[in-house]
Length: 245
Image 1 (cartoon, one colour):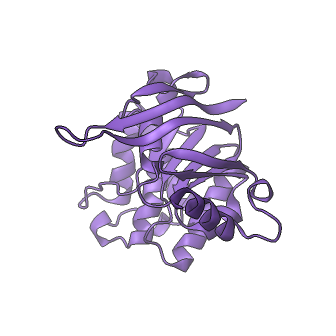
Image 2 (cartoon, one colour; image 1 turned 135 degrees about the horizontal axis):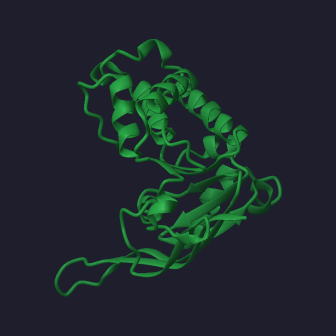
């Protein structure tokens, strides 16, 4: 079953009076299968965040269609099955971790009992159980990423979309984030995330897409993308350079 499906997604931006419009996405066709971890690799400005913003309903494409669970991605019922963590999320820093999760639980109309149970379980899952009553302003970058993941899971989504979840983390933080993503897959969830950190994608993804200048230039399992004796990093560099040549 296709959890995410885009067909011919194009997104253009105006660049000013008399200037050529900028094409952030160029006829993107993509299908994400149920229960897989799919990573999108691309250099800065490749269109990764634009793709995610369209999928979560924060932006509309210039043309093309995007579906989640067979319905338009802007469908309200579809959004209730979705968990999302932005690349640079805003956290109200004077809330404690528990208060922060309670706020998002209320947005999904969860009961007080559901919020309490889910918050407790999620804080334990992301390794923040001992920090439940700590204000977010006292959290490290890695802790903020983990509470962000907990927020994305408060509604028990079937699909989790993460924009650069390892960005800014140290090696230990990245390892913890990879393990957390793998644990979500073990629960039967589908994970779609963007990254420019090739090693993280190589370690945990079932399939990979390489996006350059708004175009999906390669997609598949790692051994389907790489040429003989190539690493994923070498394949990525080759593909980007071929476009730039």
